[in-house]
Image (cartoon, rainbow, N blue to C red; front, side, top):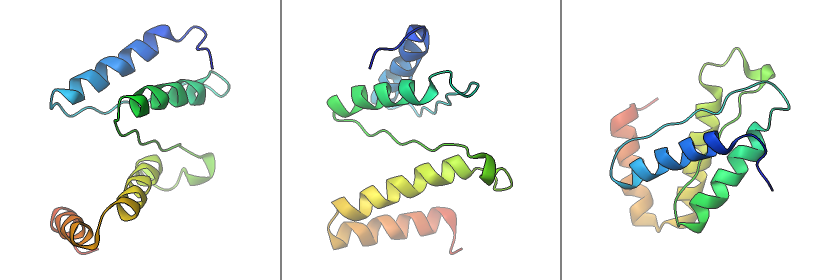
Length: 107
């Protein structure tokens, strides 16, 4: 896919990613009206991250989920948890679950 008119946005995402590789915590939101190319931009950036061996998570705000606070973050976190479940052995899964439980609480 070719990114039309979003080179600056892709550059900003790459800069965030490069900062994260140096140990910084980074978080990016891609916002804009319907049809403005947000999904294409996100998918292009995900390809760049994947080629580099990185991890890209995404969540999409849905009009039907407006009443659910942080629904897109929840989707991204669920995606990450599913990745972890599928890629770790049972001992690491227990360690991860314990760490998350300690950080987030029992509920």
